[in-house]
Amino acid sequence: MDDRGCHTICDIAGASVQLLATLQASGFTAISDMVHKFSVGAEGVTGLFLLSESHLSYLYTLE
Image (cartoon, rainbow, N blue to C red):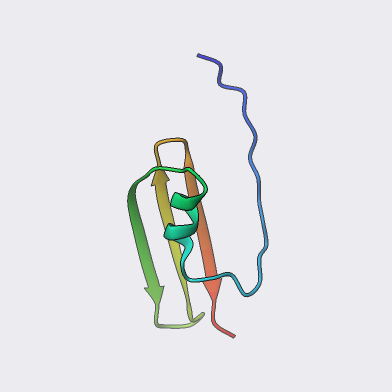
């Protein structure tokens, strides 16, 4: 197995909430997803999409 790859980190402001649709339209296959909304302290949302190709994690903070 060739385990060389690339890790891309993006800091995106104003990203669409249609992230799953965007992933699917880009050819990725979502296996599962997880979302947690913070309600104390730093308001925001963190989540993860488990993809058959890899994964995508995100953090969205409310300002």
